[in-house]
Image (cartoon, rainbow, N blue to C red; front, side):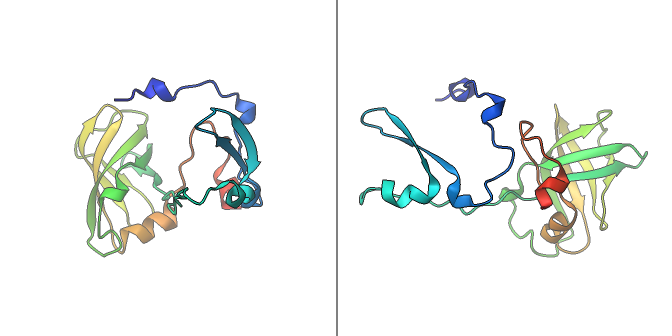
Length: 170
């Protein structure tokens, strides 16, 4: 199969967009001619002129959930969780009261099994398994889990994007 190194290539930081284009249709578009191997540069607004009648255009209508949660341990220390398997859960719009998720975790010390983290809006999480930097937690909440995420969660950004939470909201 493929290795992660197959996707590794040098990309100068200056070429990484830090914010989306104000006019999304003016986003840059790279066209690769599979027959000749040549590349040409365009704007997304030109995509209809670049497509052939036999081409298939797949539209990705997904969104990044605000699955980055900032909370506190019962001792008062800070904790950051990033939910990894949100899409695997069905019924999160319902009022079921608890859900188990795998998360990446950032804390000053590795938590023990049973450690409880507190977030806003009556959301808490209990550590039920731990492996490396991944933790399995049982979220316990009142209300609808998805709504709580959209109220208190943050949109995760990759480390090469240098923006603050305030920048994202505007």
